[in-house]
Image (cartoon, rainbow, N blue to C red; front, side, top):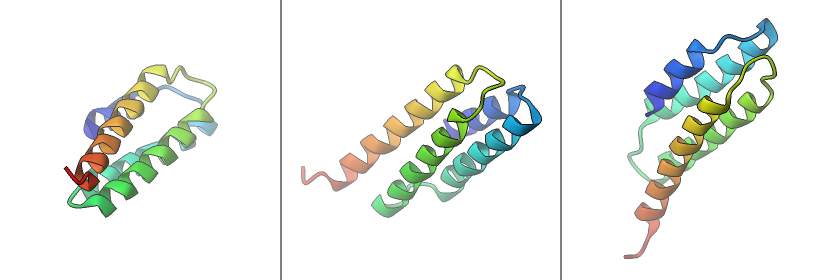
Length: 90
């Protein structure tokens, strides 16, 4: 899912100023993709990176980011569920 999110972000047309924010979001998601989710610590880092990507996208004004934001929300939900399952005593 992170690969699809990166592709969607790369396809966005935006102003030069907003392009740097999109690139910042891509860097954060690329870290998630590269890191994987071997343990709860990795997942916590991934959640943090996804939230940073969301924050970067919130500053984009020259392009409609609603589809990409939804993709990030879904990615975040998956990592939060994985974190919960790994730490659950059940």
